[in-house]
Image 1: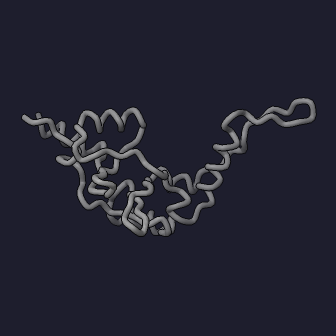
Image 2: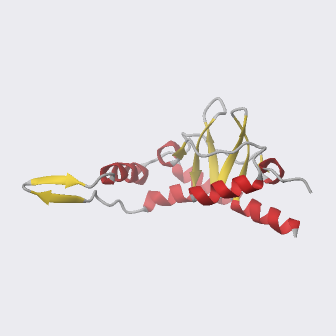
Image 3: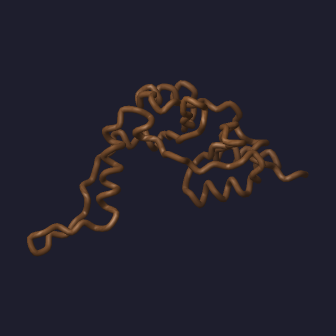
Length: 154
């Protein structure tokens, strides 16, 4: 049996969003189409991001102020805490997909093996990967696609 690739198991013609789409409309679209993420395409059709359920949940998440030490009348912020605070705050008040999406998401080619796709999903702790060919979105692969492929082999 030939080694399966992303092309063999991906969902072709995935539901997509524009960066200008409101977060509310993105949530409605995900619910209506029963998908957990939307690839985000610019006006020319190029993949610029991925907005997932997790990104939308951040809309309602509490923002934690940066961790700091008060020492000798001054404040010392822990490394990385201010950057995370700024990112969380931006996502919490974001009104469009562009405000909450993951920009420049990890992608795979249609010829990537299922093993490579599975490894990326696990290592990056993500649930789906856009499939890009020649700079164009051609599909999306999720963990459930891999599980179905494994089950079909048995």
